Image (cartoon, rainbow, N blue to C red):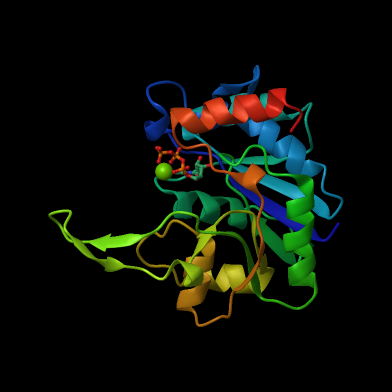
Length: 223
Ligand code: CTP
Ligand code: MG
């Protein structure tokens, strides 16, 4: 394998409701992070996995993941971008392709990890998995008054894993300013072209209780 995968997993999961940090919440009896790491490690290209865990749970996460896959566990930061930066700093010499993958996308198939890695290997500096937008999208003002309808055909919903040539991601994080919600956004600011590959509905981000219920059903149905 020539790929390192960074797994930001240090978030609280506020939108999921009160409880332990989101990556540690159970899905079909196992923590979300266990599902996510098992699927990442099943992708043949993956050599290294670095998890950014909640600061108070680094040892717990190490113990929890030891039987799942060989991983490095570091302490995450105050926002997602800081957690990714902490994980990136821990990647050993070797892998020249780095993927960044949300722990919250716990059902992401190993095939999606492979297809993103393969697109980087094929020569792209930055690759993101996307899906078409299905809803009609309106732009509104502060009073919820409609300003207009956006052309949906030119929009994409963005998932992870996002893949990068290692120096491209390192340079983007070194230059990063205000925190963004994805790594491709930092790379775009550097003027680096970002290309899209088809995403997967199974790579949904478990954000609200509805998503967790959906993930339970998908797993029960064999996902
Ligand atoms: N994340 C992280 N460090 C943070 C915040 C988020 O590593 N300080 C991670 C989360 O653990 C998650 C991913 O970034 O795997 C995507 O973030 P999100 O879905 O927003 O998760 P949370 O921040 O935990 O959820 P919420 O925003 O509802 O609190
Ligand atoms: Mg968040």
